[in-house]
Image (cartoon, rainbow over all chains, first blue to last red; front, side):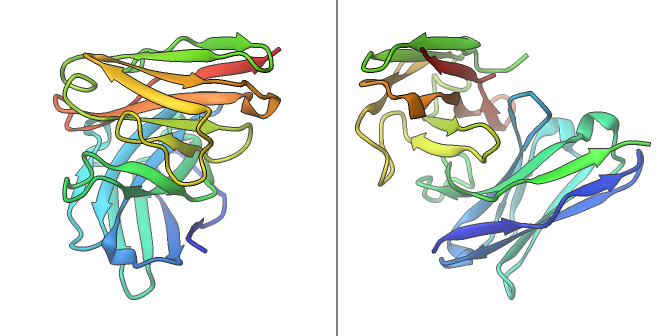
Length: 125
Length: 110
C-alpha cells in the first residue's frame, strides 16, 4: 500500500543538527513532491517546505531559510529533512507528506494526501 | 499567531450539523485553493477536503467544504462520536511564498 515511513525519535542538544528520513513505497516516488510539516507539543501545524522528487527543486518557509535543507534519494525513494542550529523551540513532531492534486504547481496547489507517522525531535541541554 | 484564523473550539451533539470557519486574506484563501485536515489524538493528520470542496476517495460525504472570497468553511453533517478531533485548514500564501495553516479547531461531540 501507499505509505511513508519515517525514521525514529531523536534527542539533540541546542546548536546540533538533525536529519529525518521519509521512505516512500507503493507509488512512483518521482511523480510527487514531498512537503515537511512540524507540530510543536500541544500546538498547531506548521509548513516547513517542499521538494520535488522529480527534479529536486525546493521551496522553504521563510522563517527556516538558511537552517533547513530538503533532499531526496530517488534510488531508495527516500526524502530527507535536515535542520541545523537547533533551538529548544524546534522541539516538535516532524511529518513528511506527499503532495497531490496540485499538478505542475511546484507544490503551491498541493494537498497532503499521504502522511508519515511522524518523528519526535527533542532539543534539550 | 496563525495566518489563517479558525475558532479554537466547536461542539455538537450526535446527528447534528456543525461548521468550522477559516478566515484568511487576498494573498492566501482569496487567490488559492483551501484544503482541510482532520487530526485524531496522537495520530498524523488526514486529508479531508482538497481544492476547496473535493473529497478524496474514502472520505464520507458527511464532510463538505466551501470557499467564498477570503473565507472557507468545513461542514460536518450527521455528527458522530468518531468525528471528535482537531481540524485544520490550509492554503498557499502568495506573500509568504509558502504554505500556511489555520491554528486548528478542536471539535467536541457532546
